[in-house]
Length: 265
Ligand code: HXC
Image (cartoon, rainbow, N blue to C red; front, top):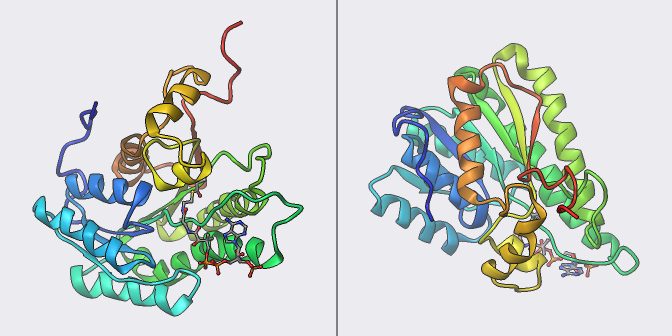
């Protein structure tokens, strides 16, 4: 059941948002909701066809949206995306870092290059796009939101690479919030657990259907279900709006209370 947004549809009007990993999964869900609330959208990612298909869905709904393919591991690609957004729409106000690379692999067999690849995509990629976006975000007193995870809070089986990468991203959130706060740039993160109906969850549950995953994991949370892309997008809108004006350096744990305790005995 699609929930109804609690925000006015023009709450982000006049704002320009860049969303990394915006062609699919969580990133596309965020792009859709930011557009529905008035933002103009630029999505980026490595797979051009995914980006083109995603932009078509947005423009068919009547929104202003564009894409530029790129790899966040390459700083010049990040600069190109930022320059593209500013030249096309006139500013950059919101940066959502929702790109990620992940796969299940036991530490005892994961190669050094496999570990490095995920750190490069997730962590170096986050630094690169934030650094590239600094000047326009300073001008607009904009907002950065990182999509983190809960993997790294304790430890997660077979995800030593992604857990290390997300822990580093949480640290980057705090460091950038500290250094860029005086420019009016706010930097926050959202840490969801499993997010329904995403390629990432499919991959990590080895292809289980969304329905089956919800049935299995939902009862383990006090709220009785797992997170949706819509849930994440609503918190991002809050963070980017005046409602989040005094929040920075925070990574909001958004797992429906799953961390609190197990199910009732
Ligand atoms: C072991 C693997 C592997 C696997 C890649 N490698 N896949 N090792 N098991 N399944 C190793 C390769 O062998 C190689 O090391 C190194 O990683 C680089 O692989 P490449 O294919 O050359 O790299 P590249 O195409 O740049 O990136 C691969 C990738 C990425 C990291 C798998 O394409 C990717 O993740 N794409 C999917 C995006 C995705 O699923 N995003 C959602 C993430 S979900 P060697 O030593 O052989 O050279 C998420 C949410 C977490 O983050 C929270 C959920 C609860």
